[in-house]
Amino acid sequence: MINGKMIAPSKFVETADELKAKYEEFKRNNPDLNLQYGEMWVAFTYLYFGKENLDWGVIETGMGGRFDPTNVLAPELSIITNIDFDHVPQLGTTIPEIAWHKAGIIKPERPVITGENKEEALKVFREEAAVKGSRLYCLGQDYSWDLVSQGRGGSVINIRAPYGDYPGVSVPLLGTFQEKNAALAIAAVDVLAHDRGFELSSAIINKQLKDVRFPGRMEIMQDSPTVILDGAHNPQKMAALEKSMQELYPNRKYTLICGMLGTKDSQSSIAHLLPHAKQIIISKPQVAGKPGIEAAALAEMVRKMGYQGDIEICPEISIAITQTLQNANPDDLVLVTGSLYMLGEARNHWVPIENILLEAEKALDI
Image (tube, rainbow, N blue to C red; front, side):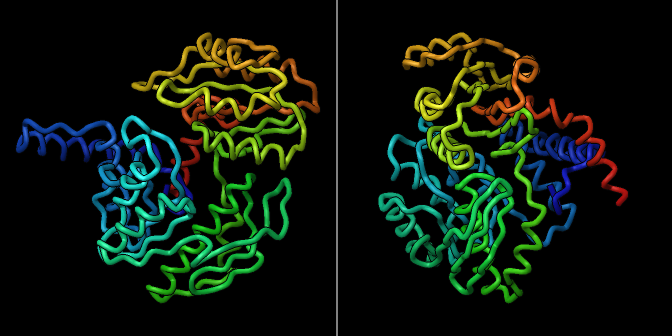
């Protein structure tokens, strides 16, 4: 996405054709080397961004950081959000091991900012920053935030950043975790504003945040019944989701539509949601190259965890959503979660992918 607009289909085809030609040339010169799936996507993205002559790019690592294909850039600033147990087979079984991979995005003499507060992770970041000669900015020490108000339309927070204060910042996203995320993002821009000499104020921040949307994270798709999509897919994110649900809908029971990939810690993740699920409908994410847990197997796991409510198996997420909405009462609450990939299928019920592509193509003429 550039300036909030998704890549147009024609631009996608054009970039893919160019990348294909470059890869064929690469193979002629390096017949024994093959780009992996993730490497090809990063090459595609960087080729597209490079041709569009960006002023600023925000690049998220795919997994870890140190050995991630994205980590060939020399960034103006590195951001490490927080550390928890995910991709354990690849990154390690302890917080310091995982933090070591994340710390790999810290670059020589470039600042780094983090939202992490676990000392065992911060120790790793401090050591890496010291070796690289990088200034490390930490939550609670160099920047902080406090909540002013919160509601169904988002929240208002005050932010104390490393080089400026930004009161009355409106965050139009649901979920308590978004307040912390916004504070980290704004503190990061504050550091860049200080280092690069551009203006930043609460008015500028609010103007930019006004239209921020995060599809698939605490996203309300409809009312009557209320349907929320959230791509929580590991224990940490599921815990944050449950906390946010209870703050927005205290003590409300909901219908849970869930499906997970086989590579995730499904049992620890879904355990956070079971206490408030009045019934569960289990589907299976359909992802090329990534195995989804069979719906019947996930249902059996949930039952063995002691869940006493109704469980229905419906492998296709589109059918699960249609049937749930047909049977729901207007005041019911429905939560769809468990896999970002599955959410892409689910969201198609309200926002057809064909419409997204058409809008992206039309945006070329604006």
